[in-house]
Length: 114
Image (cartoon, rainbow, N blue to C red; front, side, top):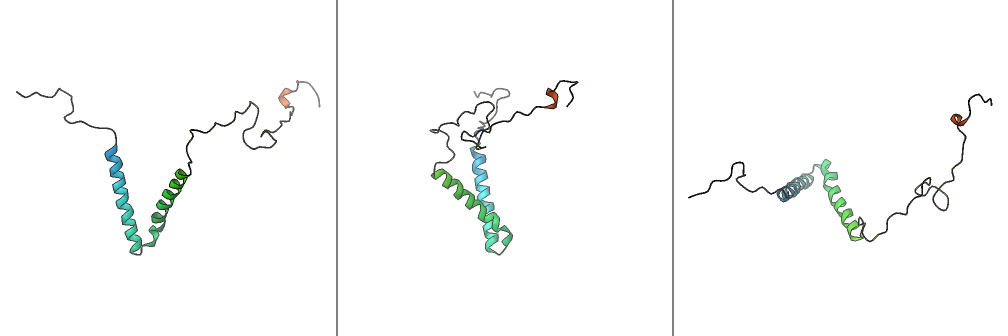
């Protein structure tokens, strides 16, 4: 005697991990890149930037990883900035600028003459 699947149950297991799509993208990207290299070898020079830029970007990212860039663990956070203090190198030894008090027109009492 065979058992029937439950109503509404999928017939096969669907995995949403996305590994198939990642591999598919890598394979199709490699095929497109190989096609562009073949076009460059055949003499179609407008594809030169599309052939040169990806390896340069990969080399820059790999170099950044080799020197340890992009990692936040093991590093201290930025120093806290007090209220009313400018952040960054905006002048002064502590990085803050002194503020000048300028009287505004709204602060004057009505009826006063200048």
